[in-house]
Image (cartoon, rainbow, N blue to C red; front, side):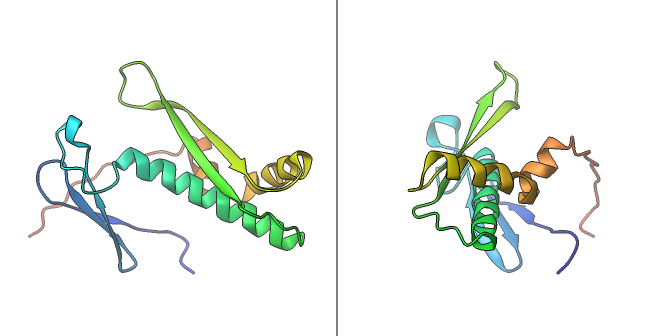
Length: 135
């Protein structure tokens, strides 16, 4: 498995884009009330989706290793905006499953170290912006 991942977004006009990675595709857009056509996820929803799905997989991994059943396992991520700023200040990860509360809490605690997305976000990852003509 490669040490890095890559996704490419192709702008499709308005607020639309098509994102691809490893041959998979997803449409991205804004809701109608924000000027889009609502044909797909908002980019910020994809951020929450990446975190929710990664944490769910981490919990499943930990449960399998410990031979624990976690029926109905669901992970929801909620993002809280900072006033009118174009960023979020808090991401809340909530896990639910049909199991005892203490066992679920232990599963969450053990899964934290296996979630690539939360580990990346919480580390204060740096950004590098580049430009390159298509020609």
